[in-house]
Length: 274
Image 1 (cartoon, rainbow, N blue to C red):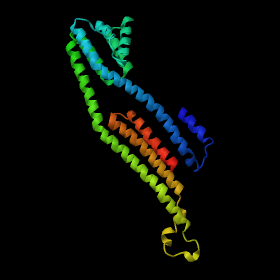
Image 2 (spheres, rainbow, N blue to C red):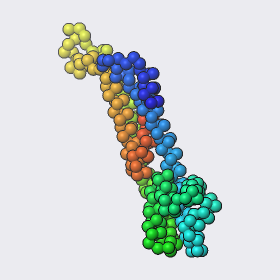
Image 3 (cartoon, helix red, strand yellow):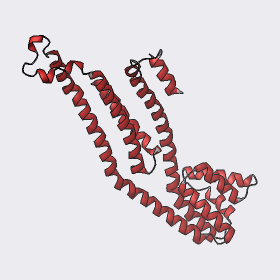
Image 4 (cartoon, rainbow, N blue to C red):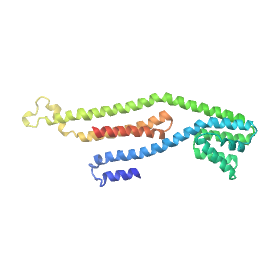
């Protein structure tokens, strides 16, 4: 809604002919940036919280395993685990304990915790623990294995981020190089065409003179249309490159919205200047 409101405020009344394209281009990119910034901020805050929870999962499982080895039940282990400092995961564990206090069983409370967090690692842990609760009362070995697996998955994610950083850098460089080439064409090449068109032979006696074959059609070239096409190409490339960067670097397209926002903002700033 904010993006639509911004677009209407900047373009109303919208022309209904071909002249609408240059009028709508800038406000449309601005509205897109409004939407992308809002989504990127909300998504990044959620992802950062989820990652903090994932970092606390191995410690939580080790505590649960130690409490199970000490003879406590799953319910008792959850109650004791609420006293530790587990960051955002500790808040969710305390909510799970309150569910149990209000009459829910341990399996239901854990599944509700899984739905609230929405983390892959937490989902795996909850599925493993609930299945182990049905199969056996000895949870400590299962919890130790789950803690080790969660720690290993975290290390693999860090290694993937380091390995993919090079590809992320290549995407940024390629997008900026394309933008620099387009800006150079608009700043240097287009003025040269305009100068050549202005000096093209107009008198009948000049036709056929040196360079007349080259410059005779330059006056018909619509440089504004070419600039608009270049702007569209650069904007589309910036948006798509950002999404690809998120998929390669962090494993999902929504993670690329922040990269798309940065590249699209740079593209809009460059075309606003040139």
